[in-house]
Amino acid sequence: MMYKVYMLLMTLLFINCGGVAKSDAGAKTAPVETLSQGSAESVMEPVAIVPIFDADSAYSFVARQVAFGPRVPGTVTHRKCADYLVAKLQAYGAEVLTQDMELKAYNGDLLKARNIIAQFQPSKEERIMLCAHWDTRPWADSDPDKANHYKPLPGANDGGSGVGVLLEIARQLSMLPSTVGVDIILFDAEDYGLHENDVEKYSSNRHSWALGSQYWSYFPHTTGYSPRYGILLDIVGAPNSVFHQEYYSNHFAPGVVRKVWKWAKKAGYASYFVDEEGGAITDDHLYVNSTAGIPCIDIINYDPESPNGFGQHHHTMKDDMDWIDAETLKAVGQTVLTVIYNEK
Image (tube, rainbow, N blue to C red; front, side, top):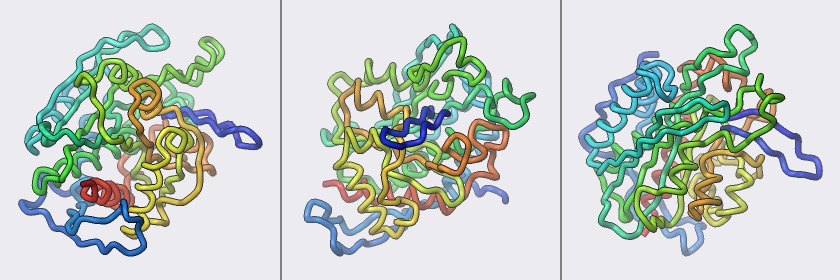
């Protein structure tokens, strides 16, 4: 995810994003928690049981992805990780489809990419869409050391964290089915956008990012696919993360933003999900909204104190497991589980 942060004065802020881990086998039974109704609006009445998100399991899923190496489209490590993700989702009872694509990057590179779609309870008409990108940036072009500017980065937080959370959610869905159907979509080729050194040559091209979701938004896995809404997870693993209400999310899906932030507060994570607007971020959800017509929000960490708005490690060789915090994964994962299991 990307790059230039234009400070918000009278205009919008636009950002282009673009220990030892435990076994990911998980428990055989799903622990659950009960939520009281409290002061939630009537449309937010909770069901009695929500699975407890296992942060250690999610952490191990992130570590497993990183262990493959950089997941750059067209590489051996990319293919091996894709096979792992498909097998893992199938093991959790999902009906898994893939979209194999050849996509042209902004610089003419042809990318062999794959979107992965996991359908839980595919016969249910009422559905929720959860998504993340699973590829990693081919260039650490924000690294302080210019010698790293054309090296692929580990992608623990940018790519790995969102997928890790969704794999743990998939594991929970396998043990306690939700009332509505859930689709987990892992988009490819999100992070192959404009290299910082190519800005003058190619000009600023925000549409060079999120190529997999652009393709899917034109050619969804099911004709007429129309879930109630979507939730995108991106850069959701860093310590002390703060999730502002992203501009496009509020523009296209304000009701979904309110729903998610209210449940985050009820679940005890208001310090992570702050009731403030952040920037406008070019990410996968933009095309899900504008092209596919599906209201979709982006849960993404915004760090205004960092050079590019996403943390000191972003698009550097330091985006490794040292930047993954189990408590942050827990805050995001438990919030999303609470939202899902309160749908009727």
